[in-house]
Structure formats: C-alpha cells, structure tokens
Amino acid sequence: MKVFSDTFPADSLSAFEQHFIRENMLFVDIETTGLSPVRDQIYCIGCGCRKMDRICTDLFFAENSEDEPSILKAFFRLLSGFDTIVTFNGTAFDLPFIRKRAELHQISLTHPFPAAGLLNPETAPDSGAGHTVDLYRETTRLKKLLGLSSCRQKCVEQFLGCCRDDTYSGGELIEVYQNYVLQKDPGQLQLLLLHNLEDVKGMFSLTGILSYRQLREGQFQISDSIRETEGGKEYLNLKIIPAFDFPQSIHRIAEDSSFLLNRSAGLIRLPLRHGTLKHFFPDPENYYYLPAEDTAIHKSVGEFVDPSHRKKATKKNCYIKKDCDYVETPSKTAGGFLKKEYNEKTAYLEIPNSSCAGHADACREFLQLYFAQFIS
Image (cartoon, rainbow, N blue to C red):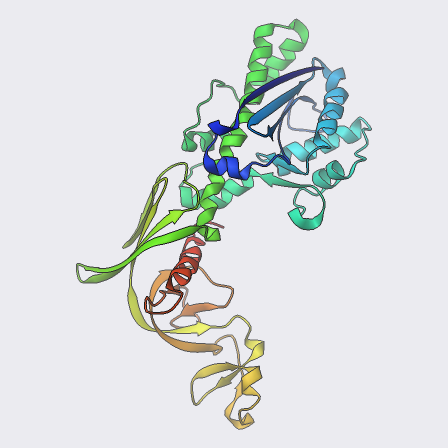
C-alpha cells in the first residue's frame, strides 16, 4: 500500500464553499477494477478534509490486490475522526462497495460512525449517528433549475467552470491499473493518482452547486419589488440578493415569466393576473362546508353552527374564496393550494399585497414556493 498526500489553501474556494465545508466532513471517492463489489476490487480510496485554512487530501493506493485490506483499514482509521461523509453518487456506489469489500475481507466495522454511516447513508444529521451528503443526488434536485443535460461529475464541473488536467474516465483506467500492477510504470501510476485526486478535489468545488438551494430555503433578501405595465399586461419584478454568491449565472424564460440569476443578485419577472380563486385545504376531514355561504370552516368553529346549515367537507368543497393577484405555478403549499376549480390541473400562487405588514417576509416565502417548481 502507498499513501499520497497533498494540501491546498481553503481560501481558493468560494465563500459559500468555505461556509459549507466543515472540519467534521470527509470527502470520499473510490476507484475500482469494475462495477461488482463481489468480483472486483477497490484499488484507490481518495479522501479530503478541511483542517483550518487548508484542504488536505490522502490517497490510499493498492499496489496489487493483496493491498486492498490495507487501504480499507487505513480508510476506516481516518474515517473514525469524522461524522459526515461527502461523496458524489456514493450512496449508490462508493459506500455500498466499500461495505461489501470490507465484509468479504472480514474487516469489522466496529466503531459507531462507519457502521452507521455506511449501513445507513441517509441517517439524519441530528440523530447522533454518522450521515452522508451525496452531491450527485443534490445535483439531480437542481437539474431543472440549472438546465443540466447530465448530472455526471465532469458535466457539473464544466457547468461550474472547473478545470481538470485528467482526461480519463474511471472505466478507461481499469486497464491502466491492471498494466501498472504488472509493470509498475511510474507514468501509469501518475495517471491513476491524478484521476482520483481530481475527483476528490473536484468535490470541494462541486459543493458550490448547493448554493442554489438558497432559493428554496429563503436565504436571500428582497432588495426591490416593482409592479409595471407593458403591452397591456401587468408584471411583478422582484430583485433578490442571495446570502452567498452563485457560482454561475442562469437565465430562464417561460412564456411571459423569466428569471435571471447573476452571481450576486437575481431578477424575477412574473406576469400578474387578478381574480377570484379557491384556496383548497389539504385536510377536509377537519372542516365543515357551509352550502349557503359556499365556504369551508374549521370544525373548531363549525361546531357552533346549526347542524342543518353545515355538512362534512369533501376534498372538492373544502375551500375558501380569495380575491387576489396571482401567478400560475404547479407548486402546492403545505397549507393547501389555489385553483379555479378542484379538477383544474393548474395551481396558482398568491402575490403578497405590498400594503400588508411583513411584505418582505411574505415575498420571500412566495419566492421560495415559486422556486420549488424548479428545485425538488
């Protein structure tokens, strides 16, 4: 077994990446001789972590198949000092592969985190056990917003503007490794190490993709809100300032609506409609319907209404009417949804009234719901 170590300054990363990457996180990427953890082996485990103002990497490399238990044990020793694993598609590939190879070599996962983290990759962060962040899965949730054709690591790196010296895929390097085991050619070793090192380093930059989650999580301020009329149509223009800069600009246009996300600001332009909509509640079992008033009321209030003037609400009549400004969106909220009629496919979002107190907070919540249609 050989170990190759390197470091680079943490301040070479963006402000969001430095904010997100904590010292309790271990970034992990493996190289294998195939896709089957039963038939194939791991020949390199690349790890990276933050140590104060430095990013440190360690590559555990197997000189031959007999070295695989050694690199697994070295990895587990390192892993014991962390409570979060960060991978790219590690939930589906890297972590199950590591676990199976350890089982076949009868390497015991005795200390708590590897057992919890590797056996339960989706363990909640506050459960007291180890957990993982899978950057591939997070990227797929952002694919619609970003307009990505693929969520493969190199494609995401290209979107983010990351540069790589390595030009090989993991599959292409299998034969290179097999030849290295026989020939011990330093040039082949360099190719193998470069690929794994750039995969590990690339993951640190890939965390920047998570900055777009600010739109769904409401981590932005609304700096301007303007209504304007153009071509006989009314529009709402909202300018936002994210808590952290975005890594790349995005421009999306859909019919009359559009949004432009620059690195440090965003402009959302939405066509306004006005009319009466029905706000359908998601829990009709907790409501009565009042036919004379054509509205639903909660049972806590409806209990005081004459039983002859009320009936149990159904999903089709469990609504109240709202006269409001709105935009079209496929999103539903936790509190229900706005439609013209229940069976209508289109749902709507109410535009907050600028004269109401707390307008900025209401607008931020509105935009969170608006962007929910692009971020799963």
